[in-house]
Picture: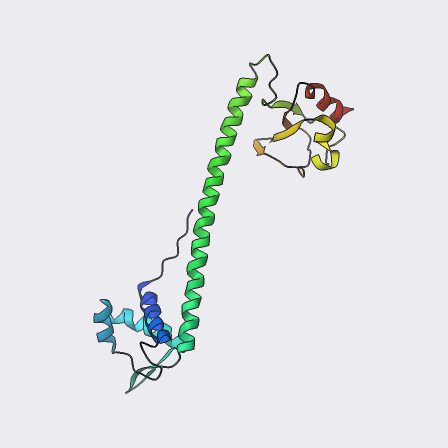
Length: 206
């Protein structure tokens, strides 16, 4: 599920005021407009302005002084506040990109599985060996390489076959890589020339 960070309106107003303080449009030591004036300027309720001012007070950008109003304290704190929310926005953007990439990966994996299943279904009806059509080999209990990785066994170097996927129970592991550990009842889907029909079982079972 996608998550999206949305800045509440009172925070947007606080950020706008902080930006004006940082740029000098609103000077340190000056007094902000009253809540009713700010509410009219930003077209929001006085309660929203109160929350904005409270947020700025909590991080010492402004201070409410009875009888004087809201006094601007620090341009530097305003800058720190702005940078903080820039970081939050960037993180939100990174998360959105990550979710999109994960969705793309899931879609690609599904397409690969569907395509591979079609190839396997078609290969069952082929009489001529095609080096691009995966051949299945089951890892039986007496296989001497159970518990070892493909890299440790030098599978490709010894058989000339490339493992494109492994069926493990209900799971189909695509492009398992050299560090996949062989387990009993794994079904190896490999491609290679016509010699792998003999080289793979000979290698697995000596």
